[in-house]
Structures are given as C-alpha cells and as structure tokens.
Image (tube, rainbow, N blue to C red; front, side, top):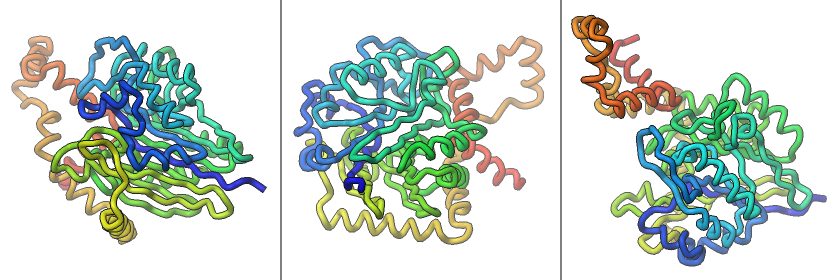
Length: 378
C-alpha cells in the first residue's frame, strides 16, 4: 500500500526590492516566517520560478519588466527544500536564451528538477515524473505565448499547443498515478476564468489531469470541481513583493494535495507583508475562503462566466483599443505610397510590440475579440 504523501504547490515566485536581500542571503526563515514549516514538511514541493537565474542578462527586445536574479539565489530554494520548479511562464526568457540555459543549469547543479522550459521546444515539452513513497506524480507545465517561446533551435518556455498537448496529457497520464498541470495563463487581476480559459482547463481534466492550477493572474481566483479533477483559476502570488494598500496582490494560496485513497486538495492562504510572507490569521483565512466559495458558486450559474467576462473586457476597452485601431482610409493609402513610414511615425517599436503581444497572447487576444464583438454587435 502506498504511503500517504503530501504535495505543496507554490504560485509565482520572484525577488523584488523588498525581498531581494532574502534571496541574496538564502534566508528562508526571514522570507517565509511561519509558512516555512509548511513548505519544509512537504514530501514534494513545487513552485513557479518567475525570473531568470543568471549572472549575465542579454538585452532582449520585449515589453514589460525584465525579471532576473543571480544564480546564487538558488540557495534559497535549496534551503527551503524545493523538489521542482516550473519555468513555463512569460519571464523565463527575459535575459534571452542564455538566461534560460543558465537557469536550467543552475537548477540541475543544485538537484532541483525543472519542467516547462528547455534549450529547444522538444526539451521544453518534456513532462516530469516525481517518484515518492511508491507514488508516481506527474507534472506538466504550459505557458501562453508572449516574449517567452521555445523554438526548434531556441531555448524558451513550453507553449500550450491545443492541437497536440491535450493528446500528450492523455498519453502521459497513463505513466503516473496523479497528474498536476501548472498553466501560466489567463488575464492578470481577473478573479474568474474567461470562457476560453475554462474550456482549456476542462479539456486538460478530460485528457486525464487530476489538478490544474492557473498561475500568472497575481490574484486569488476561484475553484471548480470538474469530473475527476479540480481546477484553480488563479493561485495568486507566493513571493512577488509587498504592495501597500493592495490586498489582492499581497495574497496567495499554497496548494496542498494529500495523496492517499481520497486525494484531497486544500488551500493555505498566505500574504505578503513588509517583513516577508506569513500565513493568514484564522479570521482573515475564513473570510478569504468564504469569498472563494462564493465565486465557485457564481461560476456554476448559467452564463455567469460569459457575462462577467464581457463586463471585465468592457472595462479594459480604453486600454486595449488605442493599440489596435488603425489609420483611416486616406492615411492608409498614403502609408503605402511612402513605404510604411506613416506607421513608423505613428507607432514606435514598443507600440508595435504591444500590438504583436495583444494578437498572439491567447488571453489578450480573447479580450480584444470580446471588446470588438460588443462594440460592433457581431
């Protein structure tokens, strides 16, 4: 009979100005405070590494912040006792392909397994099997497409391929007892699944996953029980800095999975403070879990997800549309005559990169399509 085994999954982890000294000194006690025993008692500990571990950061062409840390920051993770780190996210390639390779090498040299990134797309796709107490625990990691992709001959993150990866999940599930998927997707600061995100996550469960956690949103979302599995839409931050007067940003969930005959999933709420990470006091914990339960019931209502998503997208119209609306007919014609110089004049390289990301990133693309559909009534 298999021995009871506890898995703990952390959300997004990244050093910031207020926490970087903990990483530099590998001070796990100072960073995690009373949450540290929970992490260290886990039989299997997994988290999302939301930055490149590298001492050399190449300048890359992208929008958004560059997240990086020195290779000796890995000592914090070894002190905590991480089993594996997921690298499929939108920041693993912030220091270029060398940054990805340095991250992979640093983790390997410190006996921490990785998944979700590789020196090419084939390596990035490889799932991970963790054997513990006679359990075979499978972990897969996928990201949406931003400035992060692995290609045939280029290091980067593993992108979710809707044509192949659901079949890959089905095949991989046959090799393991329990399958976890880390999905770095969804829209930031939104506490519900979009219609498309829900479809993708349900499809993962249909293919054999037991638990799917959606990271990247930076806020705690809601849970859905679907067939034989559980989906967490929004795990929140684990370590991403403290922001004053921003309760949603500061809170996150440690996911605990008890592997026995019941395979129970539960959550331990944590929060960032000016002195590191702590578990929530009991009253705050119950309030947070009650709100999660409320959202869980809401998404069971017919058309709630579609209506909520429509309202959210409408609120983002002023942010998205200016990046997408093109020139008028006359300026379009003039632009062709002058060899696209009108575009160059009106849209900087940075603006064009923003447009590129709105089109190719699945979640941003879904926002844009929803906005335009409502605006044009079709």
